[in-house]
Image 1 (cartoon, rainbow, N blue to C red):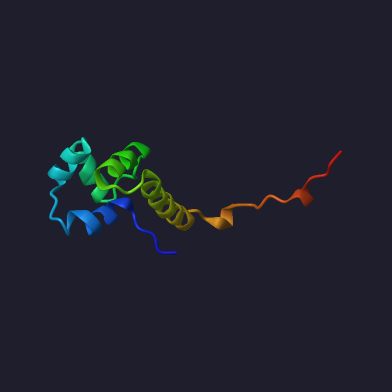
Image 2 (cartoon, rainbow, N blue to C red; image 1 turned 90 degrees about the vertical axis):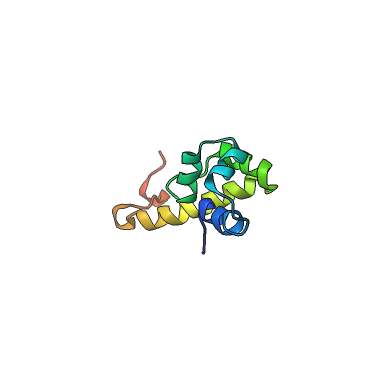
Length: 97
């Protein structure tokens, strides 16, 4: 599954094509330039509050922004978890008294 961090999507879909500066984007979103910088650099995950801000600024639902973050985060988590250290739970292991 190909996923994209919301910050990368913002860069490719809005910042670069419309030549938006981080400062202008921050002003439109009502947040600090540092907050926008972290998001665009993919050093911060998208929060529900930021998803609502993006919804109101770009007319793209907060749910779609959050879905993008969740999909990206799950791909990263699946790469990070060492499956060899886990033991699957099965009902056969337990006796019902």
